[in-house]
Length: 324
Image 1 (cartoon, rainbow, N blue to C red):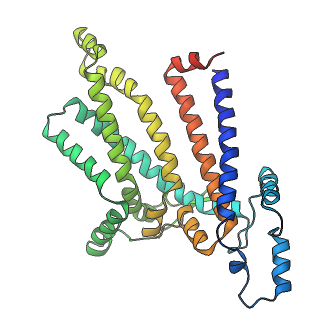
Image 2 (image 1 turned 120 degrees about the vertical axis):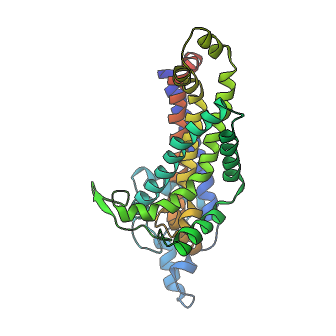
Image 3 (image 1 turned 90 degrees about the vertical axis):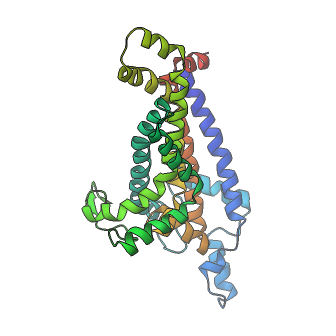
């Protein structure tokens, strides 16, 4: 297990190093930050002073080296637009994104896996066909369209739920959360539902496919021949055998949702990191763009590492294969 962990950690370090070079070169090749920092009529001496202050007069490789040095010091720069440290700015928006993402992904997991198992266990039942039809809609309909329909139906026509914003928050351990207030939940339901539908469809189809495969296996046939009840078979055999692909997809979907909840946050005016990065791109706020992309890459690498470790715990063959 130790060798497996070291191997995955080395891979993660190499990936992050390569990603930092690609992200830095890509972001710093876009536009001119002086257009954001200074008005068009600014005199040349002020322009030269700003260029020198932000190190824009240095070669690109030197700027990259300085950025990496500051990165290891925990300094990701200062926002051009908000004039505050980037980490402070991102972490101030992160709780809103985290609670939205966790609510949607966990909800999709808790609802989607049982529905998928039922659809795989009784594939010819009417309820199973209805479940699969819902999953097809989750794949087919664009997220932004579903969001607009949810707002039109539940906020405009029925007036049951608010159309945007985060609602009331409560501070827990110094961080503001809306999941601990009723008003916060009323604001959370629509964006979380919009974000969860695609994940729900994935979980349903994945659980159904795994259940169908396991139910036709010799393991289940022998268990039934031994007189084991159907409920025990599902708990001990089906859930255990389909847990590895579900764990993988759950980890990847958690990371992708956390990184790319931009559309949902924009439609519902949810004050999270996704809306922050859209505003930063529009205003060419390089430090915020860099920090977001670096943190996103680190998030995916970390999630993949955790998923690999969960894999190894669930499947001992991977540990033996990685052992020297």
